[in-house]
Amino acid sequence: MSSFANPAAWAWLIQFFIIVVALLLANLIRRKVSIFRRSLLPSALLAGLLILCLKPFGFFATMVDKASMEIITYHMLGLGFVAMALKNKKLKSATSTIKVIETGAVTASTYIIQGLVGLLITVPLFLWWNHSGFFYASGLLLPMGYGQGPGQALNFGVTFTSWAEGEGLVFHGSDFGLSIAAIGFIVGSLVGVIYMNILRRRGKLKIREGVVTEHYTLADYESEGEIPHSESIDKLTVQLCLVLLVYALVFLLMYGFQQLDLGNFGVKTLKPLVWGFNFLWGTLLGVLVRWIIGRLRKSNLMSREYINNFTLDRIAGTCFDFMIVAGTAAIDFNNLRGLWLPLILVCAAGAAVTFLYLLRCCRKLYPDYLYEGFFSMFGMLTGTASNGMILLREIDPRFETPAANNLVLQTIPALAFGFPVLLLMGFAPQSMKNTLVTMGIMAVALLLFGLFIFRKRKKQIQ
Image: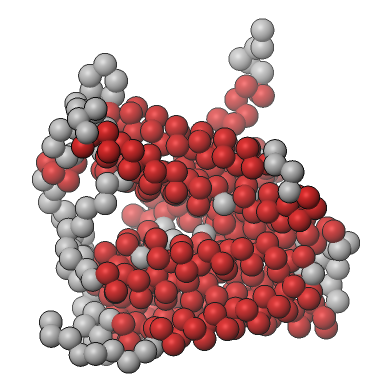
C-alpha cells in the first residue's frame, strides 16, 4: 500500500495548487493595481506570467514541473471545447446566416495570412541565419499561438519538434509556440486598449466607465424541465460527468485510430495530428452527444433536461483559465536561447498584419458596427474568444450589436474553412519543399477568401 506521505502522491495536485494560488494573486493584483486593470490583461495570463517570472528562483523552480504544465494545457483545451460543444445554442438576438459565414471566412483567412507572414520570416531566416536550433516551418506556429491559443500552439509545437529532430535540428517547438501565444494575449489586450483610447480621443467611440451591472433572470441559469440543483446527484456533478464522458469518447476515438496500420505516412503524419486535434474531436463528439440527448427528449425517452448552459459556461471558462496559466507557466526561457530574433520578428509582423487585415475586413463586413466587430475579432485572433469578448464589452457592454453573436456562431464555418489549413500543419514541416508548396497553397487560398469577403454586395433594406 502506497503512503500518502509520499510526495509523489501529491505531485499532480501541487501543480494545481500553484495555478490556483497564482490565479487568486493575479486577480487581486488586477483589481487593485490600476495599470493592470486598464490594460485588460486577462487574470489567467497575469497568473502565468507571475509563475514564469518566479521560475528562475531556487525553490520555486523545482516546484513547477514543465511536463505536468504541458499536460494540463493539453487536456484543459480539450475539456473546454467539449463543454462549449455540449451547450444548447440559444441566441438572444438575431444575426444573419451569411454574416456568420463571412465572419468564419475572416477567421480562417486570418489564420492563413498569419501563417504566410510567419513562413515569409522563418524560411529566409533558416536559409541565411544558419542556426542549428531553428526550424524553417516554425512560422506556422504563429496562427496556432495567435489564432488558436496556448493549447494548439503546444500541440503543434511538439509535432514540429519531432520533425526538426528528424532533420538533425534541436528545435524547442513547444516553448516557441507557447511564447507566441503568451505574446498574443499581450498584443490583443495592450494594442486593443491603446487603439480604443486613440479612437476615444478622436470622438469615434465611447468606452464604458466603471463596472456594468448585469441583471439575470431564472431563464439565464436554467431551462424549463431541468433536473433539480441538488437531488440524489448535484447538477454540477451531472455537467462534469457529461463533459468527462465525451472526453473519454475522444480518447477512445484517438486510441482506436492509433491502432490502425496506416504505413509510414500514417505513423509520421496522420497519427500525431489526430492526437493534436483533441479539441476538434471533442467539439464533434460533444455536438453528437447533445443531439442524441435532444432526440431522446423529443421522443419522451428522457423526461428531464440534463444539459445546463450556465454551468457548462463556467466549466469551459475554468478550463480555459487553467489552460492559459499552465501554458504560460510551461515556457522555459533556456530553450528559447538563440530564438529571440525570430520570435520577436514573427510576433511583431503577425500583430501588424492581423490588425490591418481585420480592420479592412471589418470595414467591409460590419459598416454599422465597425469597431465592435473589429475589437471582438482582433481580441479573438490574437488571444482567445474570451479576449474578444473582454474588448467588446468595453464599447458594447450589453452586447446590443450582432458582434457577440457573430463571434460565437462563426466557430463552425471557421472550422470548416480552416480544416484544410490544419492539415497543412502536418504536411509543411516534413521538408523544405513541402513548406514552400504550403506557402503556395495558402497564397491561393487567401486569394479565394479575399474574393469572397470583398465581393460586391447587393444593397439590402434594413
